View 1 (cartoon, rainbow, N blue to C red):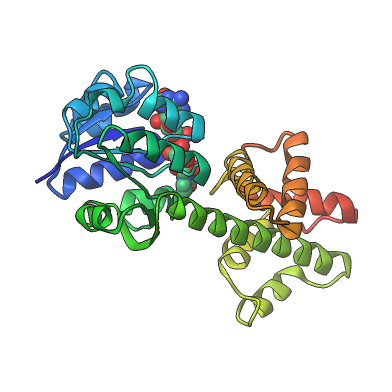
View 2: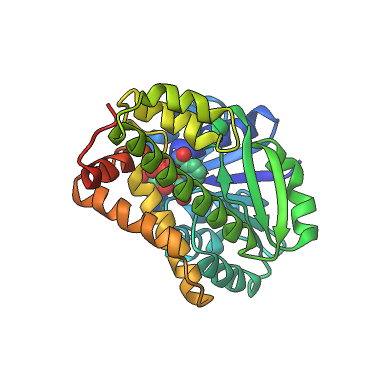
Length: 294
Ligand code: NAP
């Protein structure tokens, strides 16, 4: 059985690394804030002192940290995993980062004979804890096949998309869909409130029809209760919008709907709502309309 290294024991990494242990893998972990590794070490993981030491003890190194610069730091920086890896090792980066950075990192690793997959995820902390993530994979098909059992220990829907960076493009697509749907839900619910109809009844009626969907049911439901707590935080979504815009710029692609979504979330940022859930974009719409849903 392959020995696995795991870098980044945050909200997502905690559950994912535990699921690898449950599947019987030997796992060596590192986290910048060491105290967060305690539950995973108690569940049987070995603790390393650096990403380099993680790689020295592993055949496959998984990372899930915050953004592009953080991935570059833990994989390529001082004491980064690259310095402890040997030819033939595989790095799987599961953070949500820029496809452009992903390709650049994969090229640097390839020069040392290290293969890379990008495997960003969808499904949140619940999916991470339950081993039910959707994983969107980029990299060589044969490397994907080799790593599939490891990915299956952490996810339920695993889709091979294409070459390095293509998994991250797929995740960006997911985030375009999530944001445009959420802004549509917010606008529709404020529209109903402004017209003076019973918003809860409208929500119920339209949820079962062609307009139904995850954002309407879940985040729309939260809006009706006045619940702005996260699910998925606005500050994390703004990071993902940055990735989407960078990728669109590189491809000279206009994004009219997503650009509007970005401006609405910038309003939320200016209003100090970074730690609210993405459904709090309804506050920006309510301000424009001069009417609250609840
Ligand atoms: P999190 O709880 O904030 O954890 C972030 C992790 O990255 C922590 O372990 C943090 O270490 C580490 N980190 C950040 N910058 C670092 C650096 N420069 N050097 C070393 N370590 C660094 O975030 P999360 O929710 O687990 O998210 C991780 C990734 O998954 C992100 O790319 C996010 O977009 C993506 N994602 C999250 C969700 C979700 O619902 N949470 C869903 C899908 C995808 P410390 O503990 O020391 O801060």
